[in-house]
Image (cartoon, rainbow, N blue to C red; front, side, top):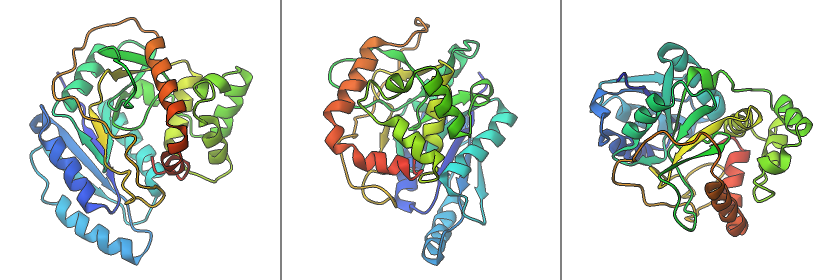
Length: 297
């Protein structure tokens, strides 16, 4: 099996990326995996000092087949960094695994991503693989599909990323024409369309809402594990546009995911569980929504 490279995007949080890389280094297949770290440039002099320290740490990272550090001189923002980085590497490798600097992965994250990328490589309705799952009530299937795409530890092929649409206005118009807004918003339980509207108006620069909308509009599916393989440690008030919170915390799965071909249709059980989580956690969700609106995820 030819392993997909891991693309890791970071800014100035040394403590977070240290933990992210430590967990990734302990993954099955880590020593056979190429790691590309994209370090964005500073917005101001204070950030420049933090980034300098972070880059000194990055130069010492080992435990992977190869480590390549891409240091940006200018600040492009997380959205441009991810869009450009994924596009560049996926054109070279054909498939990629994508992480940000605040995502702690299970020992089996890389294995799950690569095995699933191989298993569903020729299934054109499957656009991506995802690693994070909300702490929903009840038991989910071992693996399942949901319409759309997601952003907390994911992977895709060139054929999937080629469907990414940068123009939020085109995405929103298509959603309205096909009368998909309510479904896009999980029956009104989460205001994804509002995020897209704000992106169009320049009030956020989220790549994630456009990735989700691009997949949803094309009726594509993403594969999820029944138990999360990713824990986001960035919701700790360390980010520029996020409040401290713990309602998205999960215990990562410490055993391999049992992967097998399943019907390539959206799971009603999983969709209902996500919708219930969004509704139940609605009064707590604004910290994450704010982070998304500002293009931080």
